[in-house]
Length: 396
Ligand SMILES: CC(C)(COP(=O)(O)OP(=O)(O)OC[C@H]1O[C@@H](n2cnc3c(N)ncnc32)[C@H](O)[C@@H]1OP(=O)(O)O)[C@@H](O)C(=O)NCCC(=O)NCCS
Image (tube, rainbow, N blue to C red; front, side):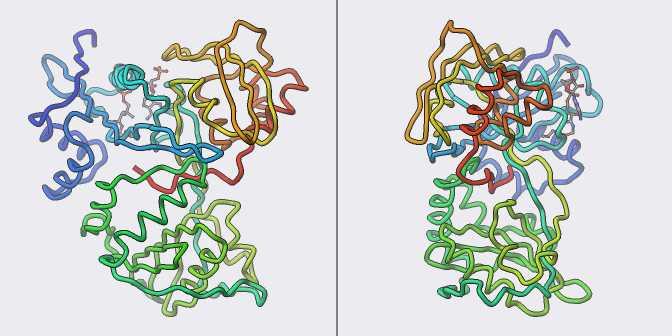
């Protein structure tokens, strides 16, 4: 496809972009939905592939977002989405051309990172994206009971959507500041969220909210044969808020099950008399991160122990790798290009996983995806362990 043109979209491309997305993701989109989307993604945030004969043959877009690194720094990181190539034009390198154009644009803008959530786990590694968080979906049996020694701090009340438009974003910002891998939510994102449109409900009710001074939970209910399924998202910034919100959620009656996502380090399971009543239904890749500026990203991160290491990063797709000296610890870090001998060798995609600490360096080494001298590996492995399990909290 040598005549392929990759260019930013204009207003005139929107109907074709909408059709392309509908055909690739097998879902129709109402005029309201596309209008809502454009409040987050104006035309210039889309990149299109245009064939001189066939017209629009590929789409990608990028939300304006940031991601939190271990230690709490948030770096700008465009959220790539709306990626599609029509079935009539697949496997001719159009996605590859779009990815090269998009990532090249991000580099030109000086962006340190890019991120996405993927439809298939096997596509994006070749473009330098690595798995940076995991999604663990669970179902909680309504028979789940809290142990006698589980905290009971209280302080939770029900609220309507109009009452949480400031509280929920405030809690989310506090949560994101302490959670590696957390994806920011813009004002426009919250505005669309609070509209709570029918097309975002998946056949369930509009949102119910529970608020605590240090937490917030939102859920939808869908009636089944034996009660409702409650689909919950919960953000808590203190253990008290976490316990108080879950206590109210578990006290609900006429519930068939609660479905939610929990990190493996979430304390809820430890507070139940029968931990098996939380059943993991799937664990899969969540957020994918692509490092574009190694010194900026590794220098902004904090480390679990003092580290002084030279690492060699391979980047076959974009040439953003090289050899870097990383000196850091729990209080700060610096990362600079160097000509010194490298003790650790890693590919760019796997560096994306290490940035949040989603994967242990020693696991990558055992899988022959990272090479290091034994002494360097032991320290490197511990240094990259984050303060809590990384989680992105928002799909896009
Ligand atoms: C996924 C999709 C965008 C790929 O587009 P495409 O133009 O056919 O991809 P390309 O021809 O540029 O392929 C680039 C590389 O990705 C690989 N690839 C493409 N689609 C893949 C898939 N679904 N699974 C695994 N690998 C895939 C190709 O084999 C190729 O590998 P190589 O360059 O190492 O040989 C397209 O199939 C699509 O629109 N699918 C439905 C919607 C979707 O899933 N979008 C992604 C949302 S995150």
